[in-house]
Figure (cartoon, rainbow, N blue to C red):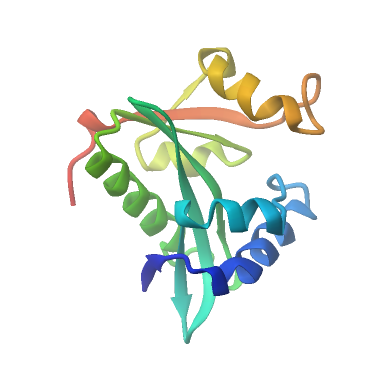
Length: 156
């Protein structure tokens, strides 16, 4: 079941994302950041436990970002991640967003969902707004940029 995250879900979101960050698979998040942005997050629950999460951050009038996409490894391969992405794309469409991008260490996952790889240089507002605060900036960013035009995606 996918639902908008609530304050009570923050601890589980942070723990889930940071479990992958500890393995170097994604960037970590803080509790403070997550509380401040909780309205951007959705969660997937199974037996009332958060097993997946993701966020949609609007950057400008025509573009948003999928962030902090994580699924508990016990539930990998069950389509949970794809459901989260589709839900966030639907949300973006409802907001009038035309393009959605992600910075990811798993570009093939996004490509299977219709995203295309692009140069991070095509996202200058993103790089200077968030990336300058990343410990991997500027020399060791190992994330790939992917983007999807919502006009090319069928509504579900």
